[in-house]
Length: 194
Image (cartoon, rainbow, N blue to C red; front, side, top):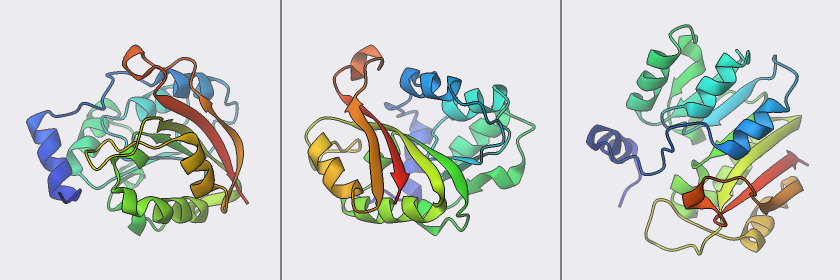
């Protein structure tokens, strides 16, 4: 199975959005609510229907970027946020993203949607696009990695091994406020580039 543009466009067209909670993820909402600097340059990769993006934007964070390989999710976000500048909605492959000065990247079901063979590339790209004092924050699934996906799982020790060459692991722990279907299946994390 190729997890390419056509695959994702087809999923949106068919309404196969099993990852979509219909609202901002509670652990990410709690994190966003603690942010004071509304000028942060934030990226949400593979944002789906953009619940985190909409929440950020309506809370006064106007320097929010989205990158998605599919057109439909960007179109959906634009409908919800008609004032968001077009240049902040990037339709491209994440690995081709040319912007590299983000203060914060919010991870919400993007990592788990990638072919697991791309995980090291993901880590390197995240390290590259963040400012030296930036942060990669979000959720990673905590269930065994299998070939059946997306989503593709993993566990704490795998993630530590994968990220630690490039990131200081500030927090990597079970999420205490995940939605019910994801309870005990998500790890909340905060990583800083080293």
